[in-house]
Image (tube, rainbow, N blue to C red; front, side, top):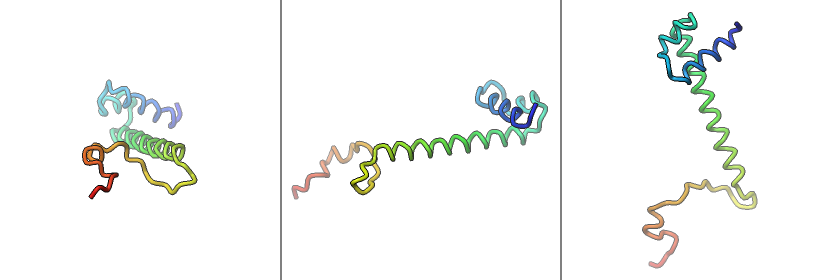
Length: 88
């Protein structure tokens, strides 16, 4: 078994959530630090994917003729107090 395959197997066990990190280390005959490293790699991959997906969706929704303004969604506060109208 290659090192890559071992890491993938450890990560699969982490994702399944059936075993503790210590049990995973024992199952694969590695140190607990290896399991922790595999966990950190999973977290980094997830963070990278989240950034990629968020950036991709922002790019899809952007009207390139207008300056970029992030969309924060509907705001209850704005609806409640009708901040767009200036009837002072």
